[in-house]
Image (cartoon, rainbow, N blue to C red):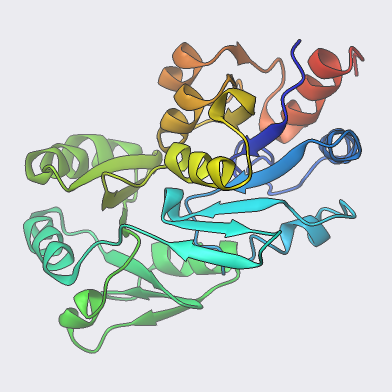
Length: 276
């Protein structure tokens, strides 16, 4: 296959499975790509402060990522310059409007502040998320704290996929407008963000600043917030554990899921011609 110059990959359920382990074949694949001069970056829905830079060390890659896309394109970090750009934040009036309109769902809204998560109330879903991502979580004293400053995105977790699809998503669809939209990044997680922000535009901005085009990019993803990145990339790969829409628009689907080194096995087989 064509050897692409830039690789952009989602993290959870793409580079690692539900056990959050990064496999040895994925490590080998990334190290070989890096040695061959491929620029490697992560594209996440999480903010960059949430340990995105540390993954290179945790995964024992031996090199830093060339770029990081956080908040689904709302943050762009360039390792070469050491600078992070933030763009297209949700404004306080918009945040307040969404929270008030989503009130009938009974779900707990939460946002990211620098270094911690801020929620309306404490519940088991918030605690589980904080533990999973090793974050501090806080609860507002007054609801207006949630819209006291611009943010990258507003989120809602549900107790089940059924609750999400039957209650939360239908209501969210009725309040979307030309400035913001809602999308699922898990079966139980809904996110609101500015329509101009998505991983594809984040990767494109980094590429343009560094002399590449989206035709130079191979992108890996699994979920709804990966769709635009996958559509815009020169070549896209969906993990076989990914959502059906991602599989439909992808150029290829991995033979193995994320939890079984799906990314690494695919790169070694289709890039280097080695069956593992």
